[in-house]
Image (cartoon, rainbow, N blue to C red; front, side):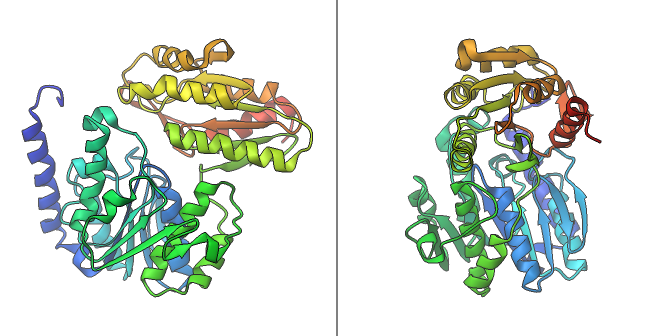
Length: 401
């Protein structure tokens, strides 16, 4: 239907749903402080960190992200396969948060959600920018339009803006007016790691940035920086984000990364971790696909090239082909890998192969899905969890119960 309905009517449809939703649920965002977190990567981890800080500070919190929907102590998995749900879902969610006397609602805000007016008629108290790299280019038409969509959150948020000034797009987001602006970065910014010297349990410089963003949000609401620091330093990670599933005799990580920027950071982090842990050389074995059939075809060989550059073994497999031919997607990723590529259509079989070839002290990294609960193929959602499959296949191979 999207292919034959003019964009004007689609836009009017989405706008109308947002408007009717806020009326039906009684303009709920005016009765709760709403925090919107946007950027290409890091949104989920930042939202989970902030949730933990606020809860430990004694606040009641509602949370909507790519993993779960939570209102105070009640929660459910996000099985919608939409980071920012539409059809008045968020207005209903905010109404539920108010009924449970939550003081804060933390929302992941996506460019596609903004494009479809899902942010409209939500009175955001705080807008947060994590980082920006090319993504959803085909959906928006260009990188500039993708950036512009993200900017609309800041354009409509008048109170507090929190911005990563180390990112190359910081100036674009800093140009939007706000009553208060808080910047963060490794060396500079109102909140910076030079001052805090964070020691996180979770690896990766990108998680330092995530922690700085979370501390900045808490700081904007009067939470002591050192208190927030202590909480994030004890944060054990968001599900499916650099999650260690198997620790010995080799390590197996599962991560959500499906953009070139995120994937490269994951590989760099694991290589650094490997070098710090083991004196003798060991291999990085990667299993990857290309998230989302029908979108961002440009990045398929780019992802493959990154895997080729960083990994000793590269296994390309099915991910979420939707209505595309999954083998054709695999072949497009393989163009960036070359002769090193192993193409295995069945994702379980691909994971099993990675575990079979891994030796002591090697690292296996499975990317693209994280803790997503399904694989989407031709309109069907097939139950799935990379982490469960890793454990099942590991136990089969090594006879562990």
